[in-house]
Image (cartoon, rainbow, N blue to C red; front, side, top):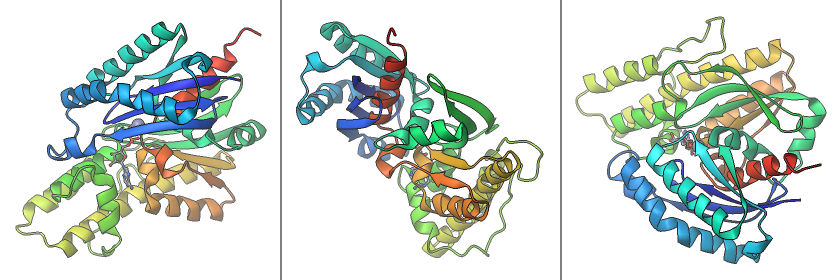
Length: 328
Ligand code: KG4
Ligand code: ZN
């Protein structure tokens, strides 16, 4: 029965949250730095770390005030320690260490990717479901990572990497194509938005590694293919941008959904979770849902606010780690 304060500073969100028993959000404060980084077309680690330093005290204060919990009632401080932008991580880790020391509480290091997976178990009964079925698949798609995972819960969250990208992450490819098309940062949501108006029959982009007999992915060849096309064009109007976005997204989703579903069906999985920032994408959600329904596989994903970087998933997973390590 833990009350955990979680701190997230892996990239461009400064976030603090208080979570009960590893699952229930009591309060949270997320301050996005998107506006600051948008003018550079991507996250500048040095600027991100300075902003974390400035924003963390106010975020902590807001999370505490909203929670009606006194600092003494907090059992431990959880902090994202890896992977992420090193200068940004260092600020969060130093701040969390200071808070833990000042309050005389334990510091719980949390893996950022594992926390993205854990976001599926926040504010619901999904963990009981996972325990009942034994094992499930999780497709983790973020700005820095793309992994197919087998997950289970036995005195802790067990994660087994089944396959992963050999080069670019899906979110990274979305962001790079968006930049080529002069769309604002972050590019993923922008590509999704304009792709809705695009015609899927205009370009036939490559589907890298689609029929290879493995569970890995590759997106840099697709990105270069699209880049060559864009750079060969003089003026690109809105319709052409929409067509490129649509055909790029179709290629990405074709590879992702086909490989994940094939592996799931072949190995008898009954449940697939999505995680990470790209799991916000409705085209991915819909296309996965269609294929899962066809094979009687249950599909789950977190709400949008828990797909992108947030402190609730850090405090949540930190709470679970804290609870399972309590002396019995
Ligand atoms: O998980 P996340 O917030 O940060 C990392 O841990 O990387 O993911 C951020 C990534 C960015 O690349 C962003 O463009 C992408 O998620 N993203 C999306 C969408 N929303 C966020 N990509 C495609 N469609 C979206 N709707
Ligand atoms: Zn993330």
